[in-house]
Length: 167
Image (cartoon, rainbow, N blue to C red):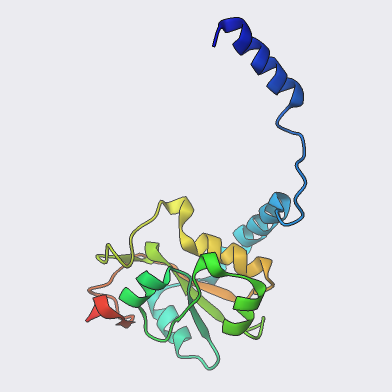
């Protein structure tokens, strides 16, 4: 492409602008940002130590949610966890797994465990599944969510595992 044509193309693009709104009622960036801001304020108070997490697992009616893929869940998951892959979260799927919105929900993700590189493959810290799961649960009205905070070694943690990789 010659220089003049390139400049004309850039001018045409800039005259349309990237701020033009493309309507889609099923995508709400501003709503997402509001939830993230709200969660950021209260999230740290709902992060649990290993000991606190194990205690909370024993409470009556607690839901231990694993939002990883079914494949990784089958390889290794915390005993008692129910699997609802993040990509399959909808109002209906959440109702099936967590019928009561005020239920106490415990979550964990890949970035909570070391030395299980297949089932708990680490993600970049800002892309941690705990972060996305917190936001999504909040978007659907589930606010009583607590997450495992520390990074633990699967070989030494007191948290019990099940699955084909944990045997």
